[in-house]
Structure formats: structure tokens, C-alpha cells
Image 1 (cartoon, rainbow, N blue to C red):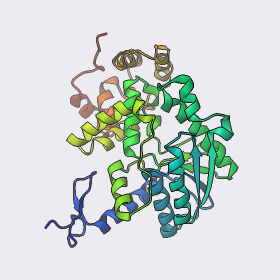
Image 2: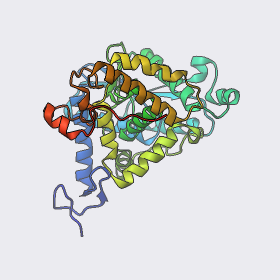
Image 3: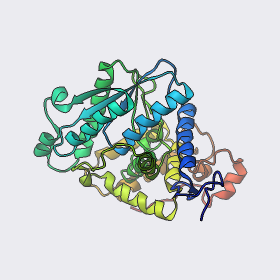
Image 4: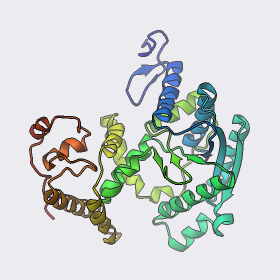
Length: 351
């Protein structure tokens, strides 16, 4: 019988995906909640008096998020008021069923709930959009409309902050997608725990470092009520390719998810590179991802060679340290960075 690696007393009932450690149920709950709390505190997500709109879809991520935030708010006295905010995209056989779960969560957690629909905001549903544009780029359209709907909904209920259930897997997938598209300028921004911090409505991700598998385990062992069916349009999304690749990496190296996020955090592009890389979007939509990736490195190489500086934003170190900076090793002495890099310039990629 394996004992819990944390307390050493109770029998282990699960192997934690992030660390592969055997753990008992109570220790897993405690560590899960503590890590989310630390993420909130270190990211300075909340302050007393905030009215926080929780983006609630009825799925595992938003259901666990609402439950944990309510628990932590009471335990650590954040002094915030939580409100559930749901968006009805008008996807028959998916969203109408998941909203029933959200309505049950409202009663279970004792939180107010507001539901807005694409129909009342825009005059059409996602099903109607798909009929017009087909099954391509549905998630792109829906993502833009959904973010706007959340902003409008938060303004209606007078919330000054929005939190969503995006987890570590989601963020790592976004980093990979930006790499495959050659979207260099977004690599650092997509890993930010809070976006729109300078605007009127910041949007935060308390689950930034929380693995999707651990969220599922938490929901399962806590017996939370959530909706588990996938959106009927998501199998056609570009994100699915990044997700498949990420799962393969995770199976080989569980820390790959966090490693990818940290890579995005330590990477930035100077203003000149951002401007040039923006031209990548002029490529036709059917351009192969490898072509976009090669072009982005050509642009990056040109600016590094011209400037003689590291491509990482706000870094005045020589270009020979570019690899160390990309790995987040900016604290290394200059000579040590030089010896750790086999090239004095980024590698040239042949067209």
C-alpha cells in the first residue's frame, strides 16, 4: 500500500498529474486550493470591494473555479463579491444543456447568476453563423463574440473584474498556436495572468498554473455538478492540433505544460520585431504553419543581427545570449551565457 507523499500517513488514492506523486484525497484538495490561492495573491488579482464576474459555462473549469473562489474568499477573506455570468451562444444540443448545470450551480453555491445570449446582444446565434460561414474558423468567431459579450455582461451587473476558467493546458496550447502561426508578438502577452489591466475591466485566469487533469480530479473527488460534453463545433478548431501535440508531450514529460508557459513568460519581442512580424498576417490563411514559423525567425534574425541585442523585450544583452533568455536564464552571468550557447546568432532557417 502506497502512502501519501505529502503527509506520509494516509493511503494514496491518486497520482498527481503535475508531479506524479501519490497523494491522499485531503492532501490533494489542500495543495490544489493553496496553489490557486498563491496564484491569486502573487498575481494580485483581487482587492477588497471588487465585484468579480465568474465566466460560467457549466463545464468542469468554470464550475471548479466558482467553487474554489467561493471557498478561498471565505477562508482568506478576500473581501470580494462573486457573481456568475453565462453567455448563451445559441448552440443547440450543447449550450442549452450546459446552462441548466449553471442554474443548478447558482443554487448550490448561493451566487447570483446573469445569462446573456448572442441573440439578444447581436441578433443572431452561433448556429446561424455556422450556416453562413460553414464549419471553418467557428471558434475564432465565437471567441471574439464571447469576449465582447462577457464585457457587456460584466458592465450590466456592475462588475469591475472578470475571471475565466482558462487552465495551464489552455495557455500552453495558445503559446504553441502562436508559434505555429508565427505570431511572435503575442508569445509573451498570451501568458499574462491578467489582460486589460490598464482598462476598465481586467480579465484574469486564476487557474493559469493548474493542470486540466487536476481540475477534473478535483471535480470528481468533490462530486461537483458539471457538464462534460464538448462543443459540437470544437473538433474543427485549429486549437485541436495544438492540444493533441501538447498531450503527447505531457505523456512523455508531465512538466512540459508548465515549461511551455514559463517559456512564453520569459519571451518578449521588441517593438521593431512586433511591427515586422505583424506582416505575417498578410500571408494567405492557407499558408503552411512551417512557412509562417520560418518567416518569423527570418524577421527575428534580421533584427537581432542589426541591433546586436537579445530579442527578449527590455533586454540589452548581446545577441549571443538569445537562447538563455528564451529559457528564462537571464540571471546567468554574461560569460556563462556565452559558453552555454553554441552559436553567436540565432540559427538560420533555409526557406
